Amino acid sequence: MSIITNINKAFDHRIRLGIMSILMVNDYADFKMLKELLDVTDGNLASHTKALEKVDYITVEKQFIGRKPNTRYATTKQGRLAFKKHIEALEKLINKQ
Image 1 (cartoon, helix red, strand yellow):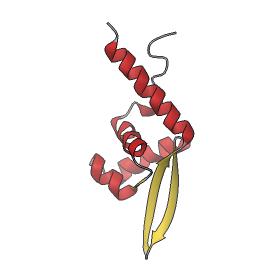
Image 2 (cartoon, rainbow, N blue to C red):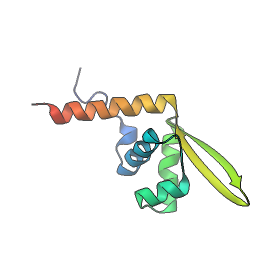
Image 3 (tube, one colour):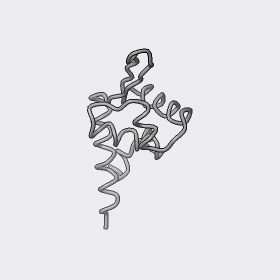
Image 4 (cartoon, rainbow, N blue to C red):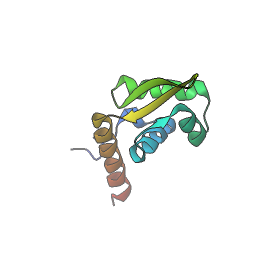
């Protein structure tokens, strides 16, 4: 089996990698938090969260807090597993001698 077999194309962009990294250490994060931590535009963040949602790696919950809309994201069990495998594959690649 190739050393790069578990490197996941869904995480090949730095923004998606950042989204998943934030969500792996938090129960959830809302749109504003992700935008600020990753320093990205609304459109950029929206397209990358949609890509992760499409492959069932994150869930999206829309609600209102007072009168303001709030969108928050969390990882799915499948997403957590895929991301862990991805990170392990990167570590093996980096540590390969």
